[in-house]
Each structure stands twice: as C-alpha cells, then as structure tokens.
Length: 567
Image (cartoon, rainbow, N blue to C red; front, top):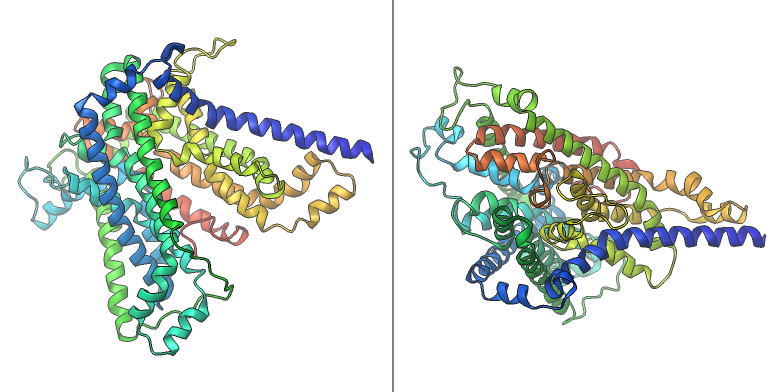
C-alpha cells in the first residue's frame, strides 16, 4: 500500500514539475527577457532604452492615439454589448440562439478581416455601392481612414466580448429582487435603473477592462485604417520600427511594448479599484427572473436587433464577398465582370498564398493539439489539487493572453534572437518562433473550458480508482481524459479558429517562407491588391462559420459557457 501511495505522490510531483517547467518557458521567461532588454540590455544596467523612448515625440503621439481609440472604442463596445445583453437576457424576444450566434460572429473573425470588410463596403471602389449607384468617385478618401473609423470598428469587434460577460452576470440576477420590484408597481426602466444595473456593475466594469485591453493591443484594425491615414498607435508604431530597422531597434520596440502592457494593466487595476468601492455580493441563489414581456414593442425591438446584425455583420461580409468577385480595383460588378479568378489565384497559382494557408493550418492545428494535451494536467492541478500556490499557476498561464499580443511577440523575438543555449538551434526567422508564440498566447483558451469540465465531473469515479490502486497516470488516461476531453477539444477548436488568421503576433515574427494567412491579407491590402485580400478573407470567414456550426454538434457534451455563442 505504501509503495502505491509513494508511486502516486511521485507521479503527481513529476506532473507538477513538468507543468511548472512548461509555464515558466511559455509565460515567465519571455516577460523576464523583455524586462531585461529595457533595464539591462547586454547584461549591463542601463536606462538608455527608457530615455530614448521617453524623449521621442512620436512615442507620446502614438501613446495618446492609443489611449483615445482604446477609451472611446471601449465605451462604444460597452454601450453596444450591455444594451444587447439586457435585451436578449431580460426580455421575451424570439430567435435568441440565431441572434447570439450572429452577434458573436465578429468576435470570432480576425480584426483585420473586419477592417477589410468595412473598407470594401464603404470605399469608393465598393462593388455594393456601385451596384446601388451611390459610390463616391474613385480617388475619394475612404471615411474609415480616421480615428473615428478605428473607434467604430473596435466597438463592433469587442461589443460581443462585453455582451458575453454582462450576459453571464445577468443570468445570476436573483428572481426575488426583480419580481418584488415589479410586484410593487415599478416599471421596467425603474427596475433596470435601481436594481439591474447596480448589481451588474462588477460584470460591466470587468467587461470594460477586458475590452480596453483588447482595444489598446489591437493591431489589425489600426493597421488597415490608421496607417493609410498616418494615425499611429503603439502596436503599429512598433511594426513600423521593426520593419524599418530590424533587430537593431528591438530595444526601442521592447520599451514600446512594455508601455502598451502598462496601459493595459492600468485598465485592469482601475477595474479592480472600482469593483472594491462597493459591496456587490448577492446572497440569493434563486433562478433568474422571468423575461420581461415587451408586448406590442416585441416586433419593433426584434426588427431593430436584426437591423443591427445586418449592419455589423451581413453588409460588411457582403461587401467583402462582392469585392472578391471583381477582377480589379474600381471595376463594377455585373454579369460580365464577375469572376472567381481571385480565388483561383490565391488557392492554386500564387505560391506564397499556398504556403501561407499551409503554414496557418499547421500552426493552428499544432497550437490546438498542444493546448488540449497540456490543458488537461494543468486543469487537474488548478481544479482538484487544493493547493494555495495553484492560483499563481493559473495567473501565469493567463499572462501571455491577458497582455496585448505585441508584448509577447517582442518578448519572443528577444528570447530567440540568438540560438538556444547548449543546442545551437536557431528559432529566429523561422516558423517555429511563431509556433512558440501561439503556444504561449492561446493555451489559456483551452485551459478555461477544461477547468469548467473538471468542476462538473463527479470526482467519485477518480477517487474509487485511486482506492482500487490505480496510479495517477492510469486514472488520467482511463477516467479523467475521456471525461474532460470534450471540453478540452472545444477549447482547441476555439484556438484553431482564433489562430487561423491571426495577425498581431505573426506580423512581427514572420519571415520569408513562414508567411501566415493574416500576414498575406495585410501584404495584399498594403500593396493595393484588395481583391486578393478579400478572397482570402472570405475563405477564412467561411471556415470559421463552418467550424462554429460543427462545434454546436458537441454542445450537448460540453460544460455550460464553453461555446460563447451557445445559450
């Protein structure tokens, strides 16, 4: 018996050591290397990088622009997301499932695809506007090339993020408080103002903090809309510095990336401070209140909600698809000009495009498979070990995803600029450095649903196997893995969809031969070949939508909340 007990402890210790080593490699070391480059480049203490960054006027202009689009983009996302969450969760509107799927879709689409779709919808060469006879003359400035355009698309992109978090809070709203107020004669707006919104403040503030972090770290939308307007934010400034100076400017890039990280952390700390100012605890565990009956207003509200979907999803995607069917910029779309040549070119004729598709599929599949396998033992420690230090383990895993992607990209460049010690292996300027960054950044997307899966498992099965003498690794293989695999696989699917057309990280890490789909879209758009970029974007949107529909087939076997677009 003692031998089996010692064997179990040894296996758990071994698993803990391996998990800790992976997390140090993926989360802790990159951040430490980034900090070293700022304060001790070359191993010698120096403030040169800080002084150079603080005295550069462009840094402060980009910082101000980052704060402007971050603040106002967050405000728009909070207004949109909270309003939609209130209507969907608290009223008797019909067609919730289809509406939620459509509303969450922009969050699952890469930001650069969103930007390109809107540019193709409102630009002077828009095939849709030409069909309607309202297109501005060729050569006119696209109205989205502006700070206001960036703010608008950031609000559209991250409104669904706010929606998901606020909706989760609304589902815990206690029935008795709402029904007592309604029974006493309070109208819907009075209940909303005096009960619902005050109790939802923590969810709204937390959603605002996450939206702010996402907005300030977004690269795709400011790159597509801001660079043509010479409106730089910190992520695009880093990209331009690296594109123009290469490894020689990594010190400057490191300072700028840390500056982005500090701005993002300031938003999170502000959320923590605001949440502690009042006590929002609710002692009730009752079911949510019955939906508010809209009566004669239900049809107008539903029409308004679907008009929103048409505006933020269907029209931009229609503009994107129509642009992919014209042979060149500014050519009207009709029966004579419609063509699939753009799709044939990017899929079969252009070597870099084929390579980018293969690279992105390989990177996405590898990151998803790795995350699924690693998330199961990590989630075991987080959910079932009961150790106090586990919360720090969880925070370390979340760090690369919580911080803007450019921070991790610069940290990865610094870590692998030189060959790996004792091995001579060079990851810099190879596809492997992108894979490393994907593994670090997206691991948490598989970890969260896996932890939720553990919390919904009856641990009696595992306990019985342990009493019967089964070792930890045997229990993991025969009992735990089959039970939590659906949740972990759903997280892997989310990783695949997120990484497939990722741009923020790969734009800073790619090299010749390691192009990704996101980089190819950006290169085509920057080179004026928007019809090719539209074709690639349309393909990735179709793949994403099909994967979302396939994921619904797993929904019955998954913990609640794993698929964000599911009720």
